[in-house]
Length: 183
Image 1 (cartoon, rainbow, N blue to C red):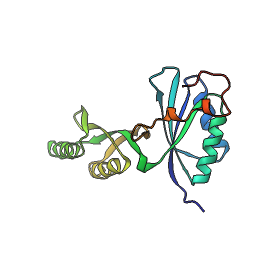
Image 2: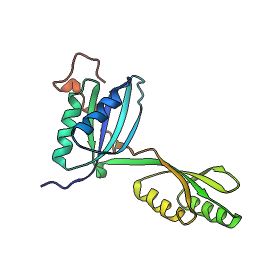
Image 3: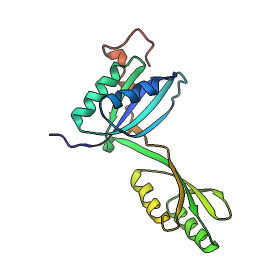
Image 4: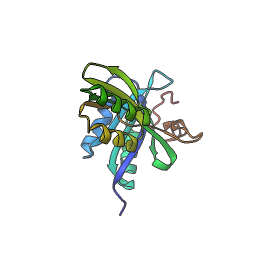
């Protein structure tokens, strides 16, 4: 039996109203919780890229990928393995900084992790950091000592390493090309 683990899917879709809802409903219908979701347009404003993280084994992810490929607005689906992809997330931390000494300690932590101070207020500092999950968890653990007032994460975005791209695997090569212009 395959091991259940967090897996990343990159999906190219039409940039149209309702497409994200259609994709997320597929996961819901199949009984999967989306652990992380990030969406944005690509170099082509008519196409969006969705990065989805979900818990599943290899067989489950293959089934989900095949189901996604059947959706009309989906151009391409690719499973990104951790060893062959670059994964990053943006996180914003609003941290209590009651005294000058506490503020300096937080700034030192930010410098160590290459986080940026993006807002300074009388009783707080807001930091922005881009990194992988382990780096984000490490800084979060240190900042909890000062009281994290608020935290927001974008969800993971990922690209495959090297020259291979998501465009290498499109519906144009498969059976679900409904006569659309595919990348």
